[in-house]
Length: 197
Image (cartoon, rainbow, N blue to C red; front, top):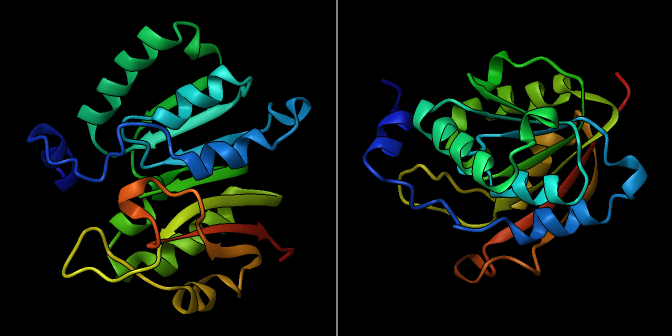
């Protein structure tokens, strides 16, 4: 049993917001309706609140992945209740993020990066680059603080710039003004665009 499956089975999911991420949903809401067929990936999807939000707003090609079977099964049940037609628009996978294949036009990042050991951050950046289509974007919320131990593992803008600038055009990296209350002042909103090889 992997660590994350164990946490789900034991109810150790303190990272779960209980609602969709306001920054991610606001960003997705700015995508014109005619472009909402783009292929979207949400890694480490957990309870998948963002997926239901996107489905209700006309997004029609969403892939969600989590490594924990319990998380995936719970999400499957939530989707069945909230959006019974979801299999027509959403692919729900129980697998390792690092085995995925793209391309995706948009990757939404919420608590996945901070769950990975810092030793995997370069591999994460390279995999995101590999998964994105040309001019594809990652939009996400990254912690702007430190933690004792982990996960979650914290970080700051200077570290993220050093990690992502070699591969991406940094469209936005700024304090997140619409974080949920417990995370106010401790998050950055980031938009990365894939550059040409």
